[in-house]
Image (cartoon, rainbow, N blue to C red):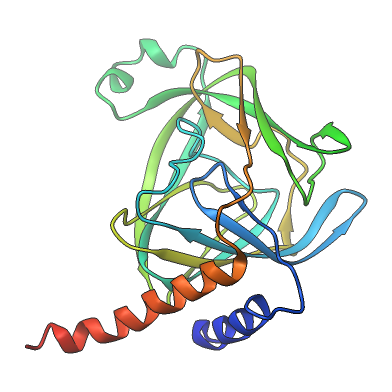
Length: 238
């Protein structure tokens, strides 16, 4: 299915007044709306979300952008543009002593375990209605090397394997939005150490605040951004 077709379905669903779709902030710097989900015994089977980055928005959990997912992921760009970075992560306690590390070819970091918190407590099992997320340093030292960077814009998509570390960045001067899907049937793992961060921190908590915009308001903003992008090629001809 094309991105435009999927967006039409999502837009119609999220802008209806018959249902309530909560919005919240994400540790990766975007606002998120859960569209639908399938969870069995705390394990994520499938999850569809709308991710929206607003100009001048919250940067998220800084220093912890490199991560991997427990399930195969696919991101479809609805509006805006961004870059997906793929990383190689290798355990190496003596990385700081290496010559290539000092040159910047390798980045010395540490593995972190991720825990989610909701009104019922904290655990490593995925929680749908999260109030916060905490990353805890495992003491396992690693080095990160960026393998590739790929740019994407509206109508394009990319995939993230369940064992693939990545980070993403979007244009800061415009709205960007993606439809993100997790699908365990296409690959999954049970790893708890999915976050890469600084070596000198014991743990860090990101509070997932309720967004000040509703799902309907976010969709309307995204739709306006799409309309503006459609006009840009015409305007550039003048």
